[in-house]
Image 1 (tube, rainbow, N blue to C red):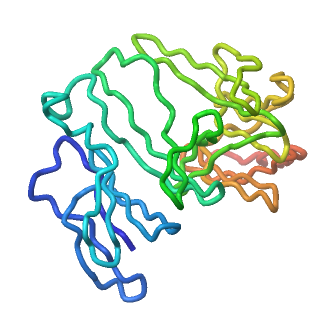
Image 2 (tube, rainbow, N blue to C red):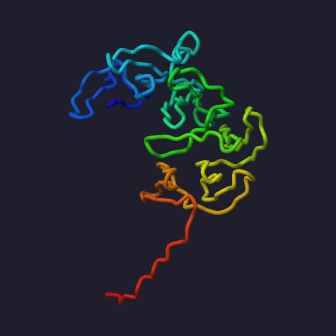
Image 3 (cartoon, rainbow, N blue to C red):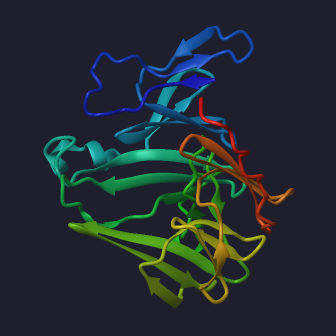
Length: 264
């Protein structure tokens, strides 16, 4: 197990590093001399530590082996860390279904926003070579500890893009295999793309047909925790309740009305 804490403005210089813990005994094996949020890449037996930039580390020795984005902490270029409009790494994910690593790096602006919100940067998990943006999958809006990504649906990519500066604009782009735009919709954004059904689930409870981008029904809008493609089930949460949702839909369960009871 790899145990760490998010690296923030308030993280002190003497903050404890990432701990490596035996999964059977829960005994601490060693501590990596770098605080931050750890992400394990099993395809390289390598640890990524998100700490403003993203460091690589050897889990066998606990040695920090590299810095993926030294430009983020180069004070000759940026002046100082955590500045208004500065860019830093917010998160990293290993996506086993795609064999890829996603790393979120964006500018941060107080109040008004910075404008275009950049999508994650994608890397081949085995080689850590950058994946061309035209062939990169789309990170799904999941609430669980594990994330998923939507790749090709048929011969199309569906990509959410956002602009956030004083006002927020969302757009859904549909691209072909070469990354060329087919169409787009202003104000549309999917929470989850289901390649099995060819449907997109929206935050407001609508379900759209991906082939036509037309609404075809509703779903009990929830923050998706996970998806079981084999059984065709989505798991989500809303207001403290767990939802199990059949991707093909089903009849609305009938509930008997409460019986009349005399007041005490």
